[in-house]
Image (cartoon, rainbow, N blue to C red; front, side):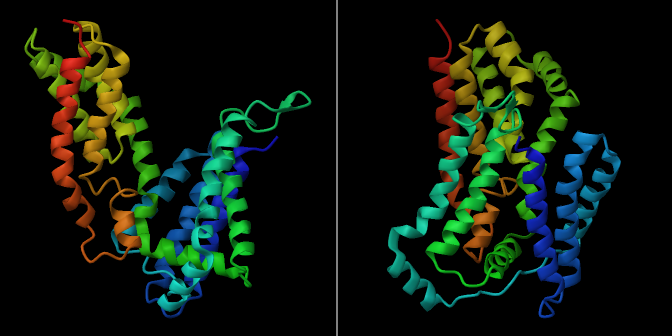
Length: 324
């Protein structure tokens, strides 16, 4: 059986390689702190799998997460490896390879879908080929390795160290924001487990006027937007607002249609994604990769779209999701 734990070890090995590259880069004045950041992150992936598998102390993992927050707070990691190729070489490569440049990137979703759909039910003897409920993540890990080898062959990369230096360069540009998405997703799970949704539901139920559907719709959509702005992810906001307003008020009290209500609710949440730096993978990371002068430029450009789009979602939910 191929286990999820192997993928976690693979990710940990990549971050450990970044730590070694940073530690040996004497041109980076933050190289010690940067190496410590990537090394601690590697530890969280390697040790985190053991917390679930063997019951190892979650307290140690928590200390590692706090250490990451402290290192990020004092300005680590710094920049990664400098550019390995010049702009002229990039242009020449783009002309030479054309659309073949996209082949490694396209392989990743294709292979991940094959693992998540076709291979997830395959058995070898009485055992599943892939660990139960982890087929897609395992597929993503396998797809990344396949794409790496295809890219190295296609582009005739001579040194095996080149992909690791490119990884270090990209992660150096992104910085601590690289780990924000998974930590915010964890925050959403913690909010749900802590009963935040029920608490918000009690407050909302006591404040909302009875028989005023439009107010309930606005509160639900506004809550999705605000929680997404805070947590950076509409998927993290969804369980909180659905437990608080979506299900008990819009579905049970006003007898709305669940499927369109929750679909439009997610779209209202994505309006918050457009206007928050907490959605790092959508806003801050692209700005860092493109080396934009204004890191909040994407948010400023998306704001005029987000507000009217949110109003449209409120109108769609009010007029289409309830029988009259």
